[in-house]
Image (cartoon, rainbow, N blue to C red; front, side, top):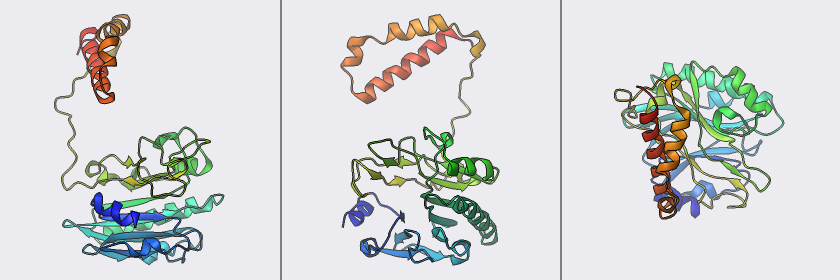
Length: 277
């Protein structure tokens, strides 16, 4: 099965699957165990799938908050820490589902403190669009999350590229909502546009999104960061220096990564020359 191979090839600890429906293929992944939503797929369904050797204890008390959105919640024990993990599917045209999701987050945060967890990680197909998580438009779901999520407790982690691909316009509706204290332990989410795991791939459908939890805080290069006085920038010289440094014949001979590297070096050099630290 493709999903089993994908999990094995990418050394995946835990899967969140949405819109499981009546299909049972995802229930039999090699060396993995499945936890289904408590609503029995009544709203398209979702599941959490974890490696057999990993301890995961389901928390239906959170899922029971709503019978109209499907979710799986539980405690993941990994690498000496506990995490409250949630996976949700928010169906379209049901704004109350967003409100119920936020209530679930608050309950998860409460249980996280009770069980002395490192924090909360919620993932899902939220059907919510907003500039905050790199989408090009804002819909009702996205606006409600922006206005009512407790940003002192939670933050959004989203891929820089689209998570739902469609001919008539792609979107960023799949992302992570996590406890703020976990922010420094999480890598930037990656959308895998090359995986053919979803319906209609690669022309239409959701792509898998991955995120890594680090044992140690992700390095923040704050000690040696240069600070510039942009009010002193000579913008004419800045643009001229970049144009002079980026020779067309040099760029044409480079790979995409090489071109990006040359561009960044040219910009940084121009900043050094055109501003005062």
